[in-house]
Image (cartoon, rainbow, N blue to C red; front, side, top):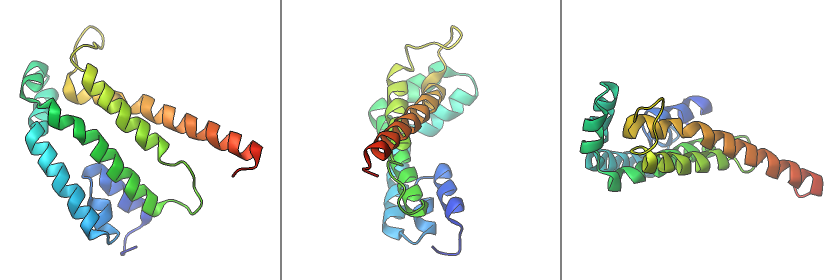
Length: 158
């Protein structure tokens, strides 16, 4: 670990995938994640979608978004988060990938349905709807991890 706390390095991946890897000395992975994020971000026009979403102009956000590219974003983002966490996690921790996997999956599902599902009668755009899907992804991932570890402990596998 390069002069930075483990938790601090993991938290940097929230800002930009790849920062945690750079801070922990995994330069090739870090640069790969950052370049991938930039390529996906530029091709999907994600920053424009974020800007229009925060301005409440959801129709513009829908129209500028290239969904073929944006669908890659959640997988890259949560994989980079998990990879950073994997470097910092306690030894022997098992199935810690499940909350990250289910969050990535449900964010992608949220992106599929962002033009159809309404919140209080309103479409909330290709940014906020997928963000809401992180919550059930985390709940599902942590719950499944808990159940698997309980069953494994009872059977003496873990």
